[in-house]
Structures are given as C-alpha cells and as structure tokens.
Image 1 (cartoon, chains in turn purple, blue):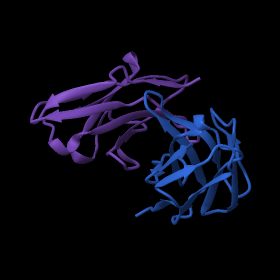
Image 2: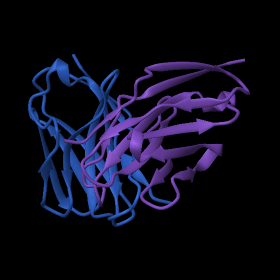
Image 3: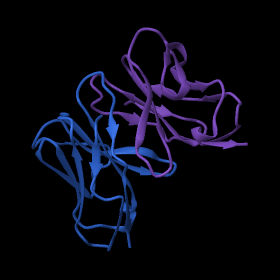
Length: 113
Length: 112
C-alpha cells in the first residue's frame, strides 16, 4: 500500500530564511508526487508535481522540490520565505492517473518576523 | 480556471440528522473525490467517482454514501450524522491521467 510520511508536524522559520519540508513516500512502482499548500480556511492549491524527467522540479511561489528515488524522498524547498508562506503543506503520492492520491499528515509552517 | 464549488462553508447539524454535502465542478472532469481532513491525520479519502453513477470506496467509507447523477455534481451523504463525523470535508476533481487535483474550499461540518 502506498503511504506518505511528513515527519515534521510544525516548523517555525524566520522571514527571509531558507525552508525545507520533508516528505518520504512508500510506493511499489514509479510514483507521481505532489506538494499542495493550504492557507487558513482555504482548499488545497497545487505547488508542484513530479511525474518523470528532471528530478528537480520548479513550482509556483518560488518553491522547488527534488525527487530522490534512492531515499524515497520528495522534499520541498524555498530559498527565502515570506510571511505569506505561512500555511499548511501536504505531500501526496499517487499512481498513474491519480485515481487514489494518498496524502501525508501535513506540516504547518509558521513565519516569524 | 477550474472551479470546484462546495455548497456550504460551514454547517452545524444534530446527531442523527441526514446530511448532504454538495460539490459542483465546471470543467467536465471525469474524476471526483471526497476527503475529510482532521488535525494530525491529513486528508483521508472517503469515496471517489470516475464516471456518472459510478463510485468507489476510499479508505474510510463507513458512515458515508455518495451520489453522482450528473457529471458535474458529486454529493456526499451522511445517513445519520454522528459527533465523530465533525470534520472539514474537501471535494476535489481531476480530468485524467497526469493531471493535478483541484479542490473546493471545504465544508466545515460540526455535529452536535
């Protein structure tokens, strides 16, 4: 069965500092990997996705993620966070066609001035 | 832009009531999903549908049913609401392979 682990429940970062959110997955075949962001009171918005090809993918809002098959990881990074990045972030893994996306438990990001 | 609209942002219902949560999408997507979101548990799939009148159980279908009579509308039904169904419910759609899922803004349901 597929699964996603986000080991950090809550991360606090100073504005302007770099950010890395961790995601580890378990999936038997080639995974399709996603990062979503949820601002307070909102639905989920896609930040970026990986299907194949270049293992470093760029997303919206200055985020990027790197797929590392050997480590079963898909960590999200941003070189300099902004106060507006405070939100909850979800990593997800799915099979071909996204029929059953499995989400991690989320990481809540707090930004301090 | 894809629009996924959930009929209510907030709902308060009594234990034992029959509850309908409605989701409408405007982009002719085949697949529609219902998730519930709880703190510390992330998003868990309740049901999904890949075509009109078709449905598949997700990971936590107990206590729920769904209806999809038209392609654009996917309803989640709580036959007899219970307090442990107090949660945030999220509807999502996607058009097919290698695409992203689009989410509604969620319905926060409180069962008292």
